[in-house]
Image (cartoon, one colour):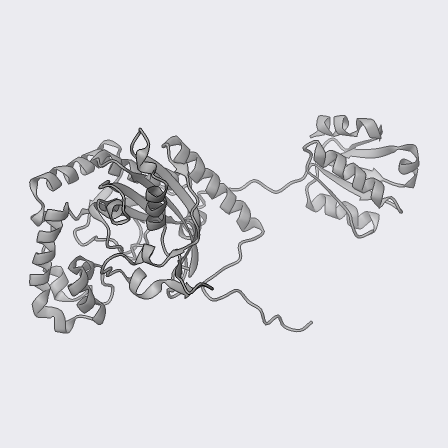
Length: 422
């Protein structure tokens, strides 16, 4: 056989076999927890008009380096979604969800995102993300709720050693004051910093603190802290968030350099990482509050808060911790055919399936021994054997694989008998 020259693109993966069962289990956990917290599912397109993601003078690496953008047949600029929040906000405004009587509107989504990034363990160019958004209300307790939901999902996945890294960027007044302080601080050091830091200095100096290249430069250690520039309201807001985490016994650590990778955050920002992360800080989920995003899409001046969670990374961590188990794949019935009775076997198979009984049959006219081996691999609870005599007499042989009993059963009583067995 010639070598297959077709392979999945770099940074993508095929999910199949046993892995699908793990994915279904994870999705089941996510849906259960989101339902408990009152978050309803939303599904948006996997591509949007490019301006949805661009923002105004956006300094994030996602916008500047990582987006998959293309022109369609009408010469329109479209982008495969690199993150979920902006598409959700676009939908929120377009469908006037702000007109609902009860706020906030709580939404969650799951699905593929796309970023041109260096593939590595747990990081893909097409990856799957869970996201939640609570839009239309501003409260420190709502910030706490989003953290609590993420923490609950991760705990249900058997991961019990997370810590929440948390910081505040303050309101617009506080953040503007902090930006100016950062610009003054980093100005004498610009020549020593990377090209990205120079760009961020002009666009959003807070993002300099997120630089992975220059993080060891002495100027980072001496950088001013955002908390020193908070006004009274922002300080009280953050204190309430911290008190809320303490009341829920959610472990946290205040991280003064944490700014997150996207430009639209205000006030609370956070990331959840394993306690034994050895300094790698592999984020399991992260997010924060955004005040001006709805308004920037033409909506009212409404706050929002939410997080994104990398599903591949969560599943890898759950497997590593042995925190998630899946049920062994089994079927109810395997139908064995002896002789030229495949149409009769097919009729029986369909009868059982139509009555909610998981059934497989042989399609290759294999030997009796080979078919019994298949039934064993499928871990069938019952085996139906059909030969020419059974076909002529309109009966089947049914073998109970647990009790090791076998008997002839009339066609009209097959379903009843199988249901008694399984």
